[in-house]
Amino acid sequence: MKKLEQLNKRAKIVSEALPYIMEFYDKVIVIKYGGSAMHDPELKKKLLHDVVLLKYVGMHPVIVHGGGPDINKRLRQKKIESIFLHGLRVTTKEVMQVVENVLGKKVNQEIVSLIKKQGGKAKGFYGKKGHVIKATKHWIKNSHGNYIDLGYTGSVHGIRFRFLHKWIKKGYIPVLSPIGIGRHGHTYNINADSAAAAVAEFLKADKLILLTDVPGVLGKRKRLISEINTDRIEKMIEQEDISGGMIPKVECCLHALKKGVKQVHILDGRVPHVLLLELFTDAGIGTMVVR
Ligand SMILES: Nc1ncnc2c1ncn2[C@@H]1O[C@H](COP(=O)(O)OP(=O)(O)OP(=O)(O)O)[C@@H](O)[C@H]1O
Ligand SMILES: [Mg+2]
Image 1 (tube, rainbow, N blue to C red):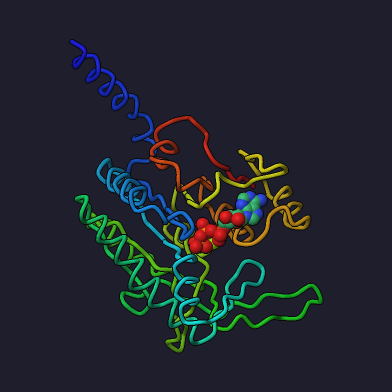
Image 2 (cartoon, rainbow, N blue to C red; image 1 turned 180 degrees about the horizontal axis):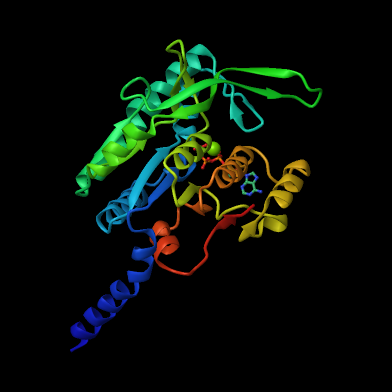
């Protein structure tokens, strides 16, 4: 009898998922999986299991991954200094080589193989192999209005979205490294949040989810801000309440919204089943970014 009760509970939960499944059925959901949230192998397995589930209920998840901590570790081993300006990595030629090896080879292939192990179809896109992200050199301005050279750090110039769509329609979950190719065949290191926002824009995604290693955007006394708009973001950056890797993250969220992505969230990738909580419940976890 107890067993039947338990099974009934499970049936109820599945049944209650219907409106959420209908809302995102046949819709593209871009998930940025941050390097900082990818530490725990068990959590990683759980998260990718849930991505496979999304695909099997008719949604189209697309993964863009980061890999900051892995890159830093490899650079430390090679005694190369990691330098960040405005939250972006300065990428010399030798740093770029490390980025390509760590992101393109290690991280990308690991995600692809974990998806496959859990019964999903995944296709890895990294660097020159199956090149999807078109890039140009990225420049930033300092407070005096002068341009700063970040080396092989790039911005997205375009996404080969038709090519990506073909794989999505064939039932694959695309897994993209944030490495772009320039006009002259150079590879560029792109902040993974910007790459994810561009992929969401070009694929006309309904949702962009940035998974990271904090509960969302945190305000004074580390309190979670559950909804944040352009004005508050600008103010928080100015007052340095948003710093480091959170700067490109919130800027990308605003860019994606401007370009027509319907919903944008920053969520804690360390929370078990965070994607299911966001997509199948009204829990309202993390930070929702609005214009
Ligand atoms: N106001 C803020 N709220 C939350 N986090 C903040 C804030 N300001 C700065 N941060 C920092 O931003 C970090 C998240 O960005 P970070 O680039 O380090 O991670 P990621 O984007 O998830 O990973 P990766 O860059 O490897 O893909 C947090 O760990 C935190 O230290
Ligand atoms: Mg980052």
